Length: 137
Image (cartoon, rainbow, N blue to C red; front, side, top):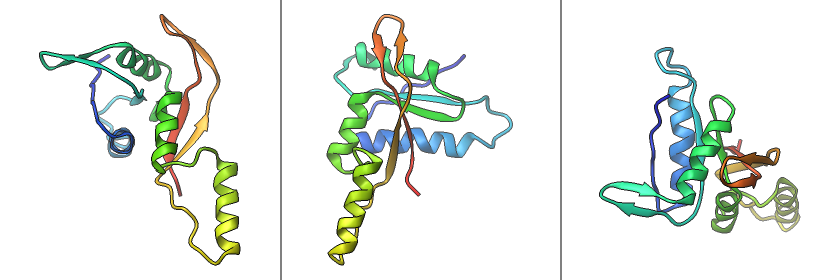
């Protein structure tokens, strides 16, 4: 099938692109089912193209993603946690919300949610643990 590669300097922007693609095109009957894979790391650019292990990992994640879903690698999940765009874990988010409520403060607001998926071997890259990316309600 056809693929499109996007590169972004910011994990939050990359997550937004992936989710908006799914949200915008899911109900378009002329489009095939979408699968999005996102990986975080160093890439090499040359003559308008992008190369490297990070690109290969994103491609592998795309191939194993459920239809109309976004899978990300562990490094991407960590980066969303580091920037405050997603909680490190739902348990931690619940603890933070409870502590904020107790103090009469607003709980942290996260744009994205991450759910760990099954560990899986991917061709040429070993075993990876993908994360399912979604919007937080």
